[in-house]
Amino acid sequence: MKKHSGYGMSQFFYAAAVVAIVILGDHMAKALTCSPVEFSPCLGSITTSSPPTSTCCQKVREQRPCLCGYMKNPSLKQYVNSPGARRVSSACGVPFPTNCN
Image 1 (cartoon, rainbow, N blue to C red):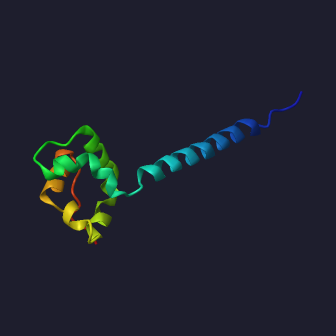
Image 2 (cartoon, one colour; image 1 turned 90 degrees about the vertical axis):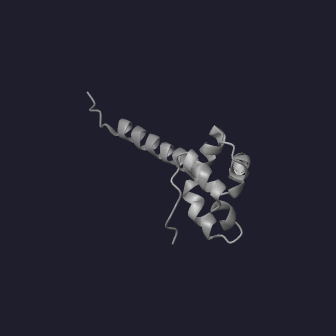
Image 3 (tube, one colour; image 1 turned 180 degrees about the horizontal axis):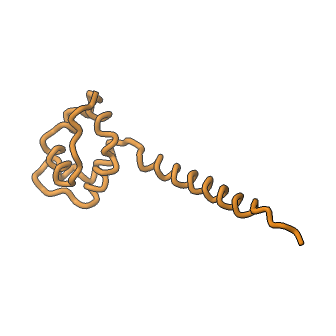
């Protein structure tokens, strides 16, 4: 009778882990792509007093890691740091960055 070495299951779990890392890594990379165009669903709420939509809030949450970079960009700073953008961020429950060194 031949003993089962156990390599089959460990190799399977290793392969599954590698596949999961590749898939999740690819998804995370897409989610963290900084693009100010992503805020287009928020434009009406930023420029008027209308409340942000759920799509807008989703985009604000997705782009949160990018806010400091936008604030450092001279072309974007005035928009990102505007009272309307701060109001939308607050309404969406996303803390506005205060220390962007």
